[in-house]
Every structure is written in structure tokens, then in C-alpha cells.
Length: 362
Image 1 (cartoon, rainbow, N blue to C red):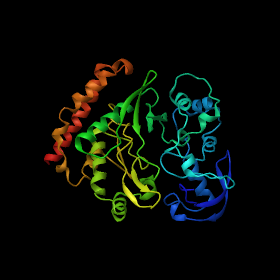
Image 2 (cartoon, rainbow, N blue to C red; image 1 turned 30 degrees about the vertical axis):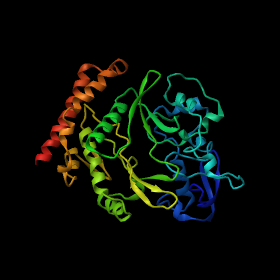
Image 3 (cartoon, rainbow, N blue to C red; image 1 turned 180 degrees about the vertical axis):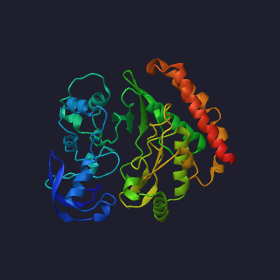
Image 4 (tube, one colour; image 1 turned 45 degrees about the vertical axis):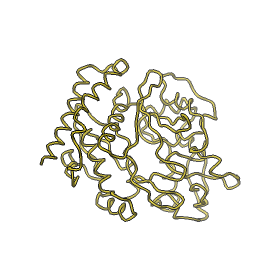
């Protein structure tokens, strides 16, 4: 199903996460974008809705949830997500999307949050705690959806012993605010003794995220497709993301962490998705390379993709390194960052701002 629109009828092997037969096609325009109609493709798509095999400490998470594999979790809540409206409806079950979706219906989140982020090793055996959108989160970082004042927020920790990712997300939000870029707003939160990032869900009950990976494999074709679907200023909005990534030396702008928002009722492309997922940045030891669709470019090459840098008011970033220095020192008692490391991070950020000024003047 796509919300309340039947898409196809198929035989599904619960627990294994595999589709073995497709019996009928209904409204194929409402299928996941560019999904081929075959059991192999459908099974792969559904598997990829689950928690990936490369999630940090996945074995411990599965142990705490008392399941053997992420595919088991997909069966606990109809395969529902907070990124789109697709779900599996048992053919003999009289139920509608408005009664089960996680945009409009509450879910238990504390047990999964503990399982994902906590340092304790207790097993979680409460079956109701597995009925949540946390079963369909992607990425390598530990994370959990929660509800506060009716708003769905995603909490996300760092990778292994590294704790900089949440601070990078907040830095990205600050840059975007100053430069006027459309973005997902990240803040910092404390979960027990851990600093995590916190952001609201930018998809609602009438929309879905279509990632760049689903659309096009090269930049010019991608821009042309967005423009042909009526998205205004598509190139400028993409260039804004490149400018942010240049300033932060973001090494992880892969094709699954940007895309477009589509209305699932009308299938109209609404807009470019706000900028999100900026954590893998400011690596002191390694300036990295930029993942530009299926190419690898240097950061100096990627900033030259921007056609008009003069629209950027670089002066708005003048005190940004001092702002970031203050932020990192506020949480120094929790991160144990040395003054030297904080200084190096701010020097690196300041260097990128000055480098951007150089390109502006050029």
C-alpha cells in the first residue's frame, strides 16, 4: 500500500523478508519511485527499509531487542516508516492507514531508545516496544525516533567513540540559518550521559522522501529532472548544499542523504528536501574527498560547481568559529575534548570560510 492506495498484491514470507509471488498490480504509479516490478526488486527494496547491517553495534541492538535480524523488525509494524507512506497490509485484515501510521498515531519509543543509545546490556522483551518507526531507520549511527509535544524527533548519537557528529549537525544548522539555506533544524540533547543531535521529522502524512539515488546518477540529469517536475530554483538549492559541505568539509554527502519531497496523494514533486545529515564533517586529520553523485571530487572542485557565489553574504559567517568554539566548550565536561582539539576544529572552520572568500573574490 501507498497510504490508502493499493499498489500490488503479493505473497510475503514473514521473518525472512522475501516476496515470492506477485499476483496482481493495481496503481503502479504509486509504487516506490523507479522500483521494478519483480519479486527480487521488491524484496531488495523492502530489506533496505530495515536497519542496515553496517549499523554501529547492530549485534548488541538485536540482542537487547531479543530478535535475530533486522528483517524480523520489519514485520512488527507493517513495515511503516517516517520517511514515506508505504506499508504491507495483510489481505484479510480490515485496517486503514490513518489508524496505524506513526505520523498521526503514538508509539512507544523509550525501550528502543534505551536499546539503541544506552550503555547498559539488559535485554528488552516487551513486544509492544517493537511496534514503532525505529524498525525502519537507515544509516550507520545509533538513533531513535521519539515524540515530544506531538512532534516526531530523531535522536542520533556519534560513531563509535567519536562524539563530534551531533555538534556538526548543529553547526550546519547555524550556517544554514545565517546564509538563508532551507535546512532541517538540529539541536543538541542529552540522553543520560551522552550528547546527541535532535531534529524534527520533515516528512508528514501526505509526503515522502525520494532520494537522489532513486532519481538520477549524474548531476546535470538530476537538475534537469527536478526542473522538469516543476521544482523552482533546483540548481540554486543544490548549490546551497555544496556551499555548506565545502565550509564543513562534509565527506558523506552520498545519494541517500539528499533528494526531493513528493506528495503521495497527487504524486506531485513538492520541493528539494531541506538539507539534512551533515555529521561526517570537520575531520582534523583528513580533508577527505567529496562524493559528487558517482564521481569523487576535491572540495575545491565542488565549490567551483556553484555558478554564482556572489549571492552569498560571507560576512554573516565572520564570528562563526568563535560561536562554534563557545558551543564546544559548553559541553567540554561531557566530551572531554581538549582545548587543543577545539582550537584545531575552529581553525579548520575558519580556514574554510577564508577559502570561500578567496573564491568569492576570484
